[in-house]
Image (tube, rainbow, N blue to C red):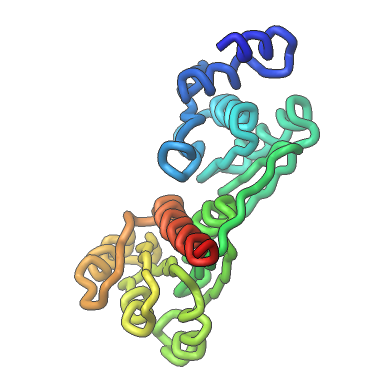
Length: 257
């Protein structure tokens, strides 16, 4: 406790960072940021931008940077990203900001990214599934996993899927995003001995075109797979991260023995 107080007093530790160490979370006007989630759960907290104002997103992202050295923002629109970029130029001028679609990751200059000896394959049935897969990819990359991205191999032309089977089998865990009737994850799960996490995507039109047809089909899959909610790229990425971390840990144990 005294060391924390002295660090705050001499300016080497911010009050927010001290609060994070003491309580595990930091309370601000935009809400509470769970700075200890990675230690407790294995997955750092992300900031869901959807439904928040730009100042709220900026405040939470800066708290994440200040207390953990990194910030992950999902489902951000252009206005929110522009506000974050402008603010970071002043508050964290040495930070790096990476954007993929609506997902943004910011890293402090002294942040040391983790590394996992595990490969996550991220697969899309079609181009329209890309944004959801992007969200999952950033989550897995943030955890230090190696990413193998395979796009546009939907079963409407099954040869596109079969051409990638060897590559699919090399991954330690697969995230497969598909809209319409959600066929691709079930087909892939029948061809590999790798854990498959299926993400139904809200693409298509007419009856069930909001992702419900894909979700229903995946829940009824006769091949063994796991299913997350519609468009839940973050959840799929987080689940794949936990599997990748377990595989990495097992490989470490194997080397030490």
